Length: 306
Image (cartoon, rainbow, N blue to C red; front, side, top):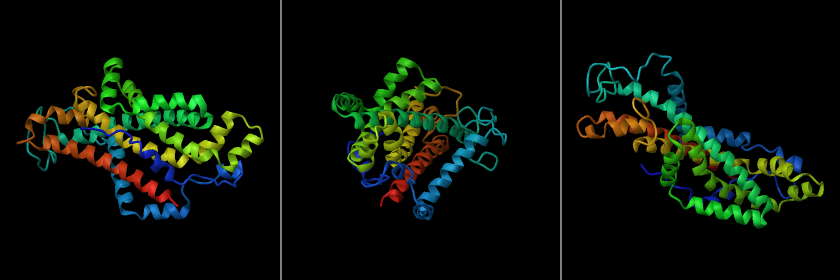
């Protein structure tokens, strides 16, 4: 289960996203423009791929929140080992006699905890460093960019394995590790977006009004690169969810008896030829969630373009 890193060409794609404000707009006008107009929002919700993807995402969110409320027990032994899918157990049972249906729904809990928090942390770190590098330029930009370049070329899975080995595989540690791994790629993209904004009128106007550097970065630049930041949150979310499952599959994330999807796949690989349901359903869960989040990000990016 491999996860691709952020390619350098992503920076060019990010710059193509509509940046708020215009060269002639003042600081106040630039920071009040919406990310998506109402017309574009209406066009977005008419896209079948967006609607279907959003429905899948909502389903997994509800599963993560409500599986214990409806009485599902992913740890209970049903007494039937490797039972075929049937009316009472629609997804069959695993090698320990536990309900694959219950474990698949419960597995969304961990995926939607570590993945989103890790991607939000990565976006916060990456956006902050990207804005600083793009605004100050000079030696600050040079030093930060070289660090970004070195970290981006490292394979994410290798980078994560090193971090997990050093700091453990607790939920908090995994969230921080994922944030650190994906922050450099996001920082490069935000830096490129900030550089595109620096020559516009509202930045020059803010400087002439002697606004502080922190105010210009926080209240002028960030709102104008917000569409790019929003897209990076959703793109990194898909990668973070897949990375979480990958670490568990490799035995470096969740540990038994957790219903984590990657761990389920790893635990039942020996039975994939005859008892295919033990691997198929958690694998489909991972794929459906990752693809739906990716499609949502793609649709938002396309809808925000002029």
